[in-house]
Amino acid sequence: MQPIRFAIAGAGGRMGRTLIEVVLAADDARLAAALEQPGNPLLGKDAGELVGQPCGVAIGADVEAALAQADCLVDFTRPEGTLEHLAVCRKRGVHMVIGTTGFTTEQKLTIQDASRDIPIVFAPNMAVGVNAVFKLLDVAARILNEGYDVEVIEAHHRHKVDAPSGTALRMGEVVAAALGRDLAECAVYGREGHTGERPAAQIGFATVRGGDIVGDHTVLFAGTGERVEISHKAASRMPYALGSLRAARFMRGRAKGLYDMQDVLGLR
Image 1 (tube, rainbow, N blue to C red):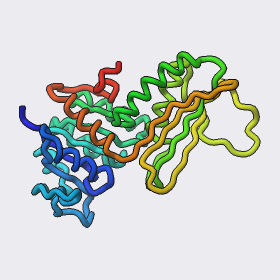
Image 2 (tube, rainbow, N blue to C red):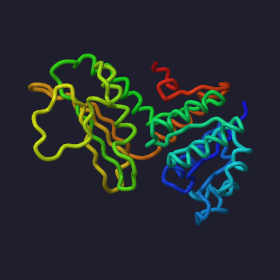
Image 3 (cartoon, rainbow, N blue to C red):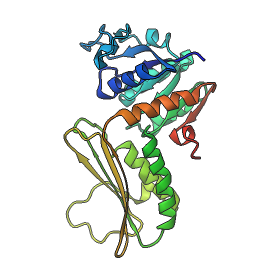
Image 4 (cartoon, one colour):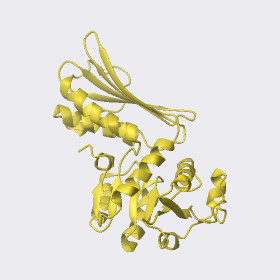
């Protein structure tokens, strides 16, 4: 079987470098292209040198040229850039793994529409462990469905631009669905001043930003006399990159469709 030819968006970023490292290490993958924005000082440099493994693939800004060489694009950048890349992937029939977060409802519909022509794995978190936590949260919420207050606490590095994180929001969605609630109606994203007594059906979110925290998430079920906490803590970006590789393998042989990591891992 031929190796999957990968293009990596945002190659010079922290996540991009980790993705390059994982692709170069995998027997069934090959780095075909690495993308950065026009004007980036890394343009023209060997992408492999970013991780100490020169590979002969120069970092470029021409999306059309990059995707002409690729089977799959992995994108953990910003919503606007991801959607621009998506349009080219759709035109060229290139598979796409989208780990970008912070999309609006309308932008998510654009991704859904593109999946009529190409296969896409779109998930708020590509880590296998986090997706196991999503499954555990569904089970826990169904058991702790009365007398427990739910709070979602997340922490990330100072450079993260969206809050709460996509993973935290997905955790809230999983719990709300298991409890028969609409997250849009029961979520509260911050508390200050005289807030009054906590409504029983509320799902609260607390956000921490600082330092180089890769990603910590905890869902707290607080009852009378006890607390249940389900947590995931990422020590590096490697789990997200390894999950992305697994997602690309999952799409092999699929002509189109919108999937997430629950599909990839067979957790439906």
